[in-house]
Amino acid sequence: EGDVTLFTRAPGYNTDITAVVGVADGETVSGVVIRLKPVDEVLGLVRDTAGRPVANARLYVGDVPYDQHTRVRSAITETRPDGAFVLSSLPVGSNTVWAFHPDYAPASIDASAEGPASGRLEIVLVKGGIVEGAVLVSDVPATDIRIRVQNRSEPRASWDTTPNREGYFRITGLPLGEVKITAYVPAADGQGKREEISRYAVLESGQVTVVDFDCRAASGVLEGFVTANGRPVADGRLLCLVTTDSGRKEVEGRTGKDGDYHFANVAAGVASLQVVCHGSDGATLFKMVKTHVEDGETVRLDIEMLRGGIISGHVSGLPAGEQGSVHAVAGVIDVPAIVKDDFLGWLWFETAGLCRIAPDGSYRIEGLEPATYTLVAVTANDTNDTHGRRIGTAITEISREGETLVDIRLP
Image (cartoon, rainbow, N blue to C red):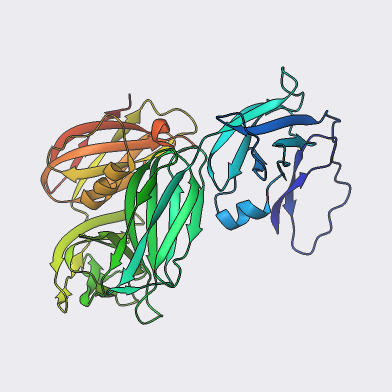
């Protein structure tokens, strides 16, 4: 029930996307006409920097599937032993053709259904980055932990693996530049919330980057109640971030019907607890609370979601298609000109108030304590890569009562 999109591909014709709007439950829709236009085959070659053909490279047109499992199964075609490939169906207009191979970094070229001016596409691949390392849980090699590498620029894609019986993992054919490496650790009791440990690295062509994960068994407990105006907050969203020597760990949770929450197996370190809920008037309330957790210690942390001070205003210079959020960070901070993932991770950890930027550029942050704040507006286009992000800042001071108006300009 709802809207349906039909994707049609046939050799010798353009790929077509047809929308069928408003299909009711149990309804049979007939008379749908799909019109395909004949197109010429597009020939191409994939080679390395030395001119050697690259066989068995997978080809994709347009958006590349993010998930590795889906990507392997959904390639348009593969290169032959001589590196050649044929695209028999392309959407009308300009398209991006991507080539993936386990030994090389992904690369792309623009193409159209009318074919390249030279008569043949040529994609040149360079040796990809390599990430390898060992995964230990309490000094024992771990095999049930999933490792994921995520590219932060084009193509937006991920690569996954699990360690072998010695706890060793290796992922090849990775894009060059900054990537995020995450270990997904199951809950100790097999029933609780999984833990994520993240690192960042910059990969170079043909070079091995070693990233080890030492997942120590944690025994700390963080629990308490969340209230708003003295009333329990049910189904509030919580994110527990803990910075340790082995990386940044994060676990998500929700409050119970009585406003209670409980995080077990919390690692020792500085814990930052973010709470997002809705007030009785529907307003979104956000609060960040920090505490320190030791191994074996139970920390009781009750949180009152006060309306507190309000900062609102307008973010100017936001083109259509860009989305973003405004972070309020206590104090005056230095913000880099180029926004990278390590800064965004730090920003989330330090955020005292947060809201999304509305399509008209307006924003509103509630629940702030009296203080001086640096407002950081971070936006990204639909590619969300490092170069597509933009950042604007402003500094203000608020009191407990009333609303402070602050406009932020994007460069």
